[in-house]
Length: 240
Ligand SMILES: NC(=O)CC[C@H](N)C(=O)O
Image 1 (cartoon, rainbow, N blue to C red):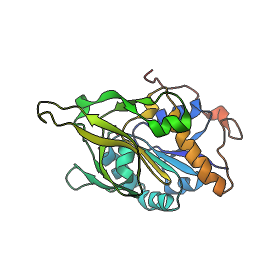
Image 2: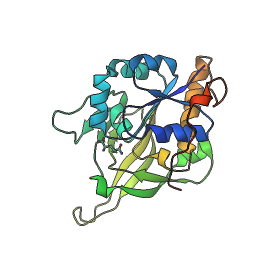
Image 3: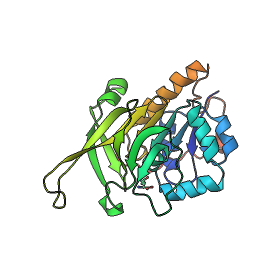
Image 4: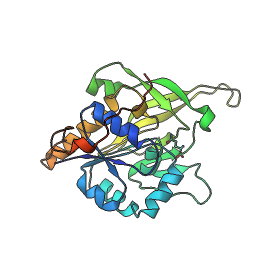
């Protein structure tokens, strides 16, 4: 049986679990290396990547996380999770932070600025709309968000964002990448788990199913064979 893990050290892991629940899929909280053996795919949520890295180091999670990625299991990083997956990060705190790596790109950790520069924007998502249907745009929630500055040849760009020109950068608009896929890896600079639109989650679940089929496994629906009586069922507030 195949379950979806959600790295639950810090950040918006509950919101991801709630989004999976809306798709009738059970998300399993992952805090220890051995728990990774029980899941077939993994979501790394947004939060604060330096703190998350310290916690991951404390729990000795990095070797198991790297192994998980190398085995070709599907992993989706949102925001801080994207930073975790990147081969290279700029704008890190002094001393840097450990990364899982695997995603051939350079990410700027706080590209869009500090917390008060957080914003929402409609972004064009042609690949998502072609696979999942629905509108050609997606409401991106960018919280102290990173951006991808360059990608390697194997990386498919799924969405980019035209940074509006401002006084500091006189008139020259710049395009940055905000969603990518590289084989088993998916990464978004924004937070789909904070919106009611579940298409990114369902896109990732399909990636997980494709890979899972190769290993003759399938996603377990909520209620299928889990002891759900003990699971809280309260959905978290989301932006509509
Ligand atoms: N919302 C987020 O995940 C923000 C990530 C943040 N820029 C970091 O460095 O960790």
